Length: 184
Image 1 (cartoon, one colour):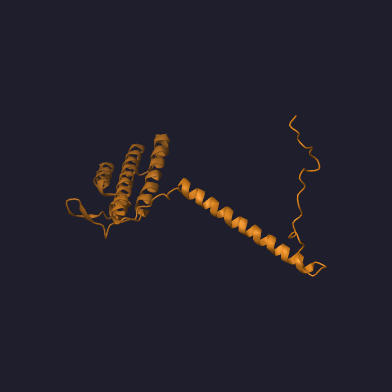
Image 2 (cartoon, helix red, strand yellow):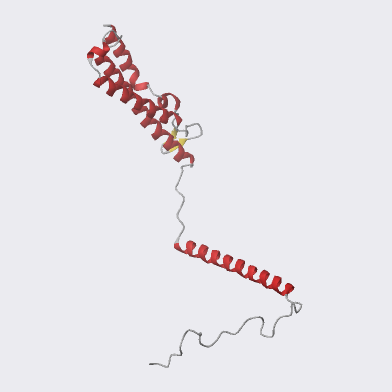
């Protein structure tokens, strides 16, 4: 009789149990299609807690199913009652988690702070960024070359005077290791 009363009380509490059932506030319906989302819950802490507690109840119930009746000898609950209570609590917290995640998602959507994925850049944006990076790199190389040329000019024995050809040697018409191609 006592075990039956415990199960009856737990069964009566099942529809209202769980962290989300107690702590998550839904948006208030003001009119058809309009909601007041100023006081609804966006934090998902309660549904996460429900998931964790529900998972523990599932594990506990599975362990109770695998245990022998002899291991419950002298306990206040028998194995069948323990399995029933574990199943009810697992269902309660799982249902509460579903309610909590759905309600917080609805509240976030109504408030307009739904986390979205970062948009991927378009091919045009990627090409523009690549060209800008290349231009910046080329400018850095040219700056380094000018700095080296200025340093070399200041240490030159002739006082830094530039040669008549601008300091650039003329490239040979044909590289020394190549022969002239006469079309054969």
